[in-house]
Image (cartoon, rainbow, N blue to C red; front, side, top):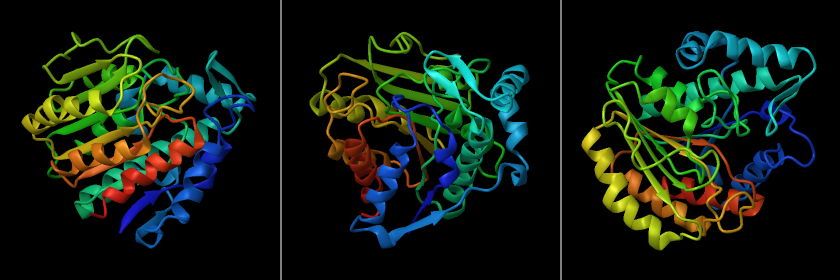
Length: 306
């Protein structure tokens, strides 16, 4: 069985009719998972209420400035607004974002308890959110927060993050690169939003591996990078938990980038990760074509049962 941590409250972060990061992303994935051949192997779990998650605010404050957290809350409670032109906040966004953080913490607990994968199906996404600024549709930096939380748990000395979203996780990297116990690896289209993620960026402890790829790249480019760069980097780090920022916007059909992956390619990526460890927390980031997004999530989860 594989836990999928999800709540309909994640649909209440409203971004506007024409915004690509919309509630229907999750609806499409949920419908696809419920119709999948392996549907009976999924355990649907509701996230712990943020108010009942004792470590939530303390770990959130490790990743984000108090003034920024208060800014997100204030914008939401005063009726909504924008952090930047791409990143809207609606009246329920702050509460939903906290619940998403709680879901990622629940995911860490599930993986560490079972020593098997879990998938966090939450929104808004998080990997562009820096310590003092949200951007790129992201409010709080979930993968970084989850890594910092995991380091507080018994038996966890190192955490690795693999970010296969088509965009570089500038927020995740900026938060975790100062921690010798956290490694960050990203494959991403370059140049592309947000403009960070050069191969020369290696972190404070040689704990960052950025693998920029050119527009038009496909699995023939990605797979050698996975096998010859990503896996050796992660294997050498010897993490006690692997967190995957699972963005699916590198699909050929995705409207926000120019990489030519197919949904089944994410199954290959998952196989490679499972070859290292089964202690993997997958958490949704980008992906804006509903069909390829949902099929890619299915490809990821399906490989966890093999």
